[in-house]
Structure formats: structure tokens, C-alpha cells
Image (tube, rainbow, N blue to C red):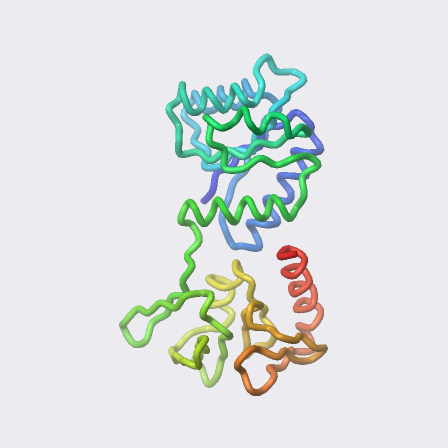
Amino acid sequence: MIHIAVCDDEVKIGADLERDLTDILDKMNVRHKTDMFLTGERLLYELENGTHYDLIFLDIEFALSEIDGVEVGRRIRDVHHNHLTAIVYISWERKYALQLFDIQPLNFLVKPLRYEKTDEVLRKYIKIAGLWSETFTYKIGHAAHKARIKDIVYLESADRKLILHLAGGKREEFYGSLKAAYEEQLSRFDFLFIHNAFVINYDYVTALKFDHAVLTGVTLPLPISKHRRNAVKEKYSEIMKKRT
């Protein structure tokens, strides 16, 4: 569970950010809770009463606050001695960036906030916080095994078994559900669920056609189910847009 605070007196910007956070984290299957604040004082009051936030998106200028976001950050670090909470500053002005060095923010985002930048910051935080494993885990018999996510070319379901196809031609077979493997471990990465029998890694796709995908090092194209074509196309475009 990630506990997030959004502190911004521009209601629409705060609401839009909350919506984007929910959308991104839901897609990554990361449990979360978000609290909204309109002033720095209200956020500090909550912290002083024992509430802990893992990640704070903090505006710098408040129309109805006697302290700005820079001072709020300083109090979090120096008065509350909290160096664990990650702070992401948001502002219309880039000029504040140099004032934030001692507060050690995770990032500085310029308004208007872009979905892609928010997504990038969340992924960075999750990796730093160790909430996102870079390995795929599975069992063969009673023994636990791991494979690096970046080495997975595709995962195949056949005869109640899963076949893990890895870069270099290595294969691993084990019992499991393709749907569960995707939803619990692979969906948060750039994988495409193209068929009831295939989940593929975007990084190895050399061509995505109407009804099949061509992967690096894989001799035959893999079919895309008719009922999954629209979802696969949308996810592929989403990943491509995010990366560019």
C-alpha cells in the first residue's frame, strides 16, 4: 500500500492529478490511498498528528497559506526529521528548482502536469522504494525460481503448464495460470496479453500486425485473439507513446 498526499490549492489540478495517480497505479496493480490538501498548514497538521505519507505531491505557491511548499518541505525534513517520505514538487515556475536542493525532492514537475511525467515519477518511486520486483517468480515442484523481467520474451500456456521463453532460447516449464501470472506479475511491466495462450514482452516485438505479432528470435508469429485485438492495439500504442 502506498499512502500519497496531494497538496495543491488549485482544485482542478489536484483532482486531475488524483485521477491520473489512480489510473496509473491501478494499471500497475499497486494498492494505494490518496489524501487531498488545499494548504501546507493542513498537510503539516496531519503529519504532526501521526499520519505517515510515502509520497507527497507538493505545490509551492498557495494563495490561502502563510507558508509556501518550500517551507513545508523544510519542516518535513528538519522539524519532523522525516527523510523517508518522497516529495515531488509541482509548480508553474521553474525558478524554484534550485531552492529545493537541501530538501532532496524525488522530482520537480512543471504545470500543467502531464500524464506521462506523472507515470514516470511513480515508476521511479516504486523502483526506489523496492515495491516493484524486477524479477518474475515461479515454482518448479517445491523449488522457487526467478527470471529477470527483461529476459522474458514471452510466456505461453499449454496443457495446464506455462512455458517461459527467455532470451537466448532457454525455456522453463511449470504449472500455473497465464491470467494470474499476467495480472499478478507482468501487467505492471510492458507486456501484452495477446491470446489466451500468449503474453509477450513489448521489448521483443519487431512487428505487430492485425492478427499476429512477430518477436525477435521467435521463428513463427504468435496469434492475436480476435476479441483481444483492440485492447492489444491500445496497450501497444500506450507503451509506445510513453516511451517516446
